[in-house]
Length: 133
Length: 135
Image 1 (cartoon, rainbow over the protein chains, first blue to last red):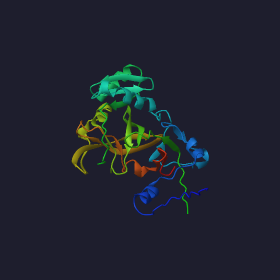
Image 2 (cartoon, chains in turn brown, cyan):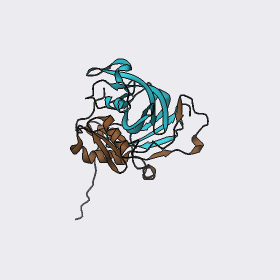
Image 3 (tube, chains in turn orange, blue):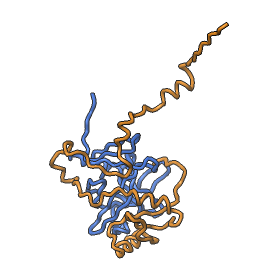
Image 4 (cartoon, each protein chain N blue to C red):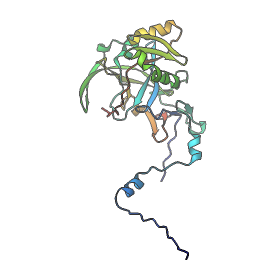
C-alpha cells in the first residue's frame, strides 16, 4: 500500500529566529557589487556631477599627492614586527628610510630622493576593537 | 523622497582596516608629510601624532594649548594652522598635535575638516565620497 508523506515546516515568529531574520542585511545585486572599485582606488566622479567655482577656503588640489597608499599599508602589515616602535618612510616600492623619530626618517627619505614619502609610526597591531574616544 | 548629493572623489578603503583610513598630506611652510588618518565624526578637531609636528619642523609648544576630554580621561594637544589635503581636497585649518608622543592616533574630526567638506560614507561597500563643501 502506497503511503503519502507530507513535508511541512513550521516557523515561529517569536524567539531567536525572528531576531535573526530581521537582522539579516539586505544583499546588493551582484551587478552592483562588481562595479565597486578595489580598495585603495581614488576615483574622480564624472564631470557632469561637478559645479564650477570652488570656495576659497577649500581648494581642490592636484592629484599628485592624492595617491592611494595601498602598497604602503600592505608593507606595514607585513613588516611591523621588524620595525615596531620606529618611524618608517615608505613609497610605492617599499621602505625608503627608518629612524627613531619622524623628522630623521623624512630627512633620510629626502636624501634618498623621495621628498614626499608616507611617514608611519610602526606599532604592534592589537586584536582589541577600538572603542572610540 | 530620495536626496541626491554630488561628490567629486570616491575612495575605496580596506574593509578589514580599523576605522575608515584615508591617505592625507599635511603641509606647513615648505614641509609636507604624508600619512594615514581615520575619519572620526566623533572628534571635535583633527588630531595627529606629535611626531608629524616634528617632521614639519613645527615648534609644538608655540601653538594653541588645549585640553581634550575623552571617555577615559583627558589629554593635552597643541593647535597649529596648516594645510591638509585629503583625496585631492585641500583645506587650511587649525589642527592639533598630541603632546604625549606615546599616542599614535591620527584622526580627521569636525572642526577644520568635516565642516569644510561634503562627506559620504557607505561602510557596507567600504567607500567614502568627498567634495569640497561648495564645490
